[in-house]
Amino acid sequence: MKLTIREIAIFGMLGAVMYVSKMVMEIIPNVHLLGVLTIAYTIVYRNKALYPIYIYVILNGIFCGFATWWIPYLYLWTILWGIVMLLPKKMPSKIQVFVYMIVCAAHGFLFGTLYAPVQAVLYGLDFKETIAWIIAGLPWDFIHGISNFVCGILIVPIAFALRLAEENIEKS
Image (cartoon, rainbow, N blue to C red):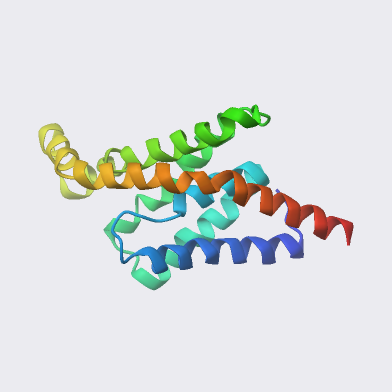
């Protein structure tokens, strides 16, 4: 996955967009565009989408602290990226919006569950305690999943805009 100078600049900006979008939307807990942007970047850039995703993760650690809460970020977004990579590249346009919205929502609903293994290891939680931790977070996961579904309507338009920008850059 050799990068061009143009790609380095673009991926740096896209990672920064993820970080800034999260900061701007932090006033509303568990509502953000991170899943939307992860999916849109993956649709357009495929394997190379990992660059802006991990630029976001690193920026998050730099500005918010490399604390224990940050460790799951090393894999949480990769799971979403991997699921999108498994989807067909050319889905019928009538269903792709809904498929992406559902995938984005599922990641939000499962966020606490996906986060839980690191919590269990770091804090020595047994199975019952881990399940209790997951259950305690369900209201937040519910908000996260619903907001990801609603925000997911933006995935296809963002991916379209990114593709259009890529085509225009290639033409010039």
